[in-house]
Image (cartoon, rainbow, N blue to C red; front, side, top):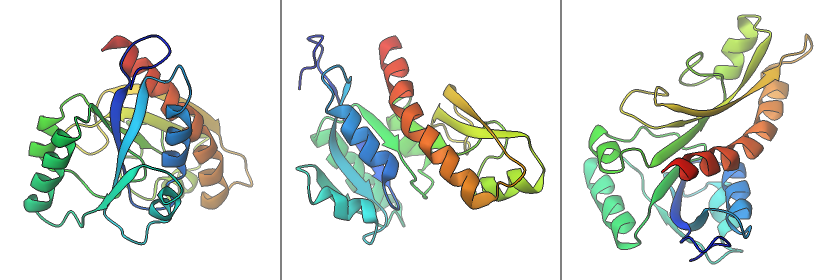
Length: 193
């Protein structure tokens, strides 16, 4: 698919585990004339993911894998190769990809994380941020490498934490920012590659 600038849009796969709110925003973003991506495939490790139900309204292919072993990853790599996927966006994907998988897509896997990395890697970020009485949190889009939440940072967005914020309200505030940050980070990454 060719975009407005005459440049071929990068075929993108999105990996999800849950509601897919970032996935929905990325699909919307991909339909813009000046978007550098087109979403070709969505993979999930959770067949009950709400995001998969949403895809039934679209023409986007979705596949479910449980990511329990290397055989799943081998099958996924074959699908990605067959569909000529250029970029993978992890969007609330709750599985850790193997070192081999990452190596095969080196520099072409993005993740969005709900903290200002390198602080608060891993899970339960909002709870930990509130517990530590931080004044700010936020979200980070980064390249995926073999260390958890440690790849090169593409973009970040800072969010002020109010005195009455709890993990739920903070999560909601940060998710809003994630929806805007992810497309910007993709544009930034793809303008330099």
